Structures are given as structure tokens and as C-alpha cells.
Length: 91
Image 1: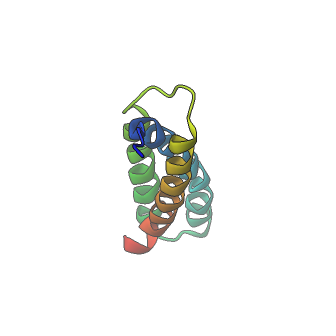
Image 2 (image 1 turned 135 degrees about the vertical axis):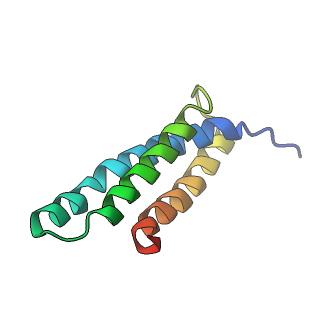
């Protein structure tokens, strides 16, 4: 059995998910600004996540996804969101 998976389409969709994650990361950034906490960590997290998302999104045009691409997209999206959510802790 030979699977022909277009991994660039899946990665491009993961980039879209990471861009939306970066938008959600603006909430803790706003809270840090309101309470006068260190905003560098949250701002860096938003920039890193959004930059990676835009780079991945531009890697390919997304056409209709097949079953293999959809399964790969879901797996990569879980990993990408987990890593993106860990960036503030790493910084």
C-alpha cells in the first residue's frame, strides 16, 4: 500500500491554526498590560506563534484535503498548538 500525502497542505492549515492561537494569546498580553506585569514574555509568544503560523500558511495553497491530509493536519495541529501554548513557559 502506497500513500501519497501532500504534507504541505496540512502544514499550511496548521499555520492558520497557529495564527488563530496567536490571536487568542493577546488576552493574557492584555491582562499583563492591565496589571503591570512583564509583557515581554507574552509579546514574544504572540510574535513567535504568529510568525511561525504565517510562514507555514504561505508554504502551500490549500485545495481540497483528502483523508490522509486531514489526518495529518489533525495530528500536526495538536502538536503545534501544544508547542505554541508552551512558548510562554519556555520564555
